[in-house]
Image 1 (cartoon, rainbow, N blue to C red):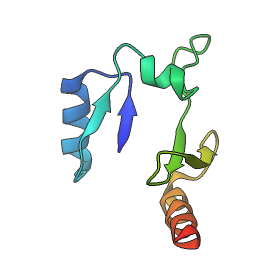
Image 2: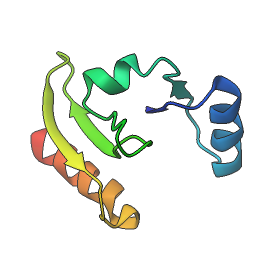
Image 3: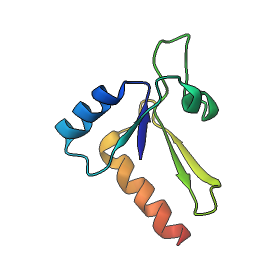
Length: 85
């Protein structure tokens, strides 16, 4: 799942435009972003972070995407899932 500080309407438009087969969460209060250390009020935009969470709800890996190649990121996460399965 994905989340951002955008509104529900903005998230829906983005997901539709990108053809995502899943919904995106609209964290307009930034509560989740703050809990997951994504909020960067000094910069005015959140950090791009991916968390790999196991079935018990434990974060087993995190990926800070600052300056990372987003084209290869999904394969990296899939490889990590396979390695843990």
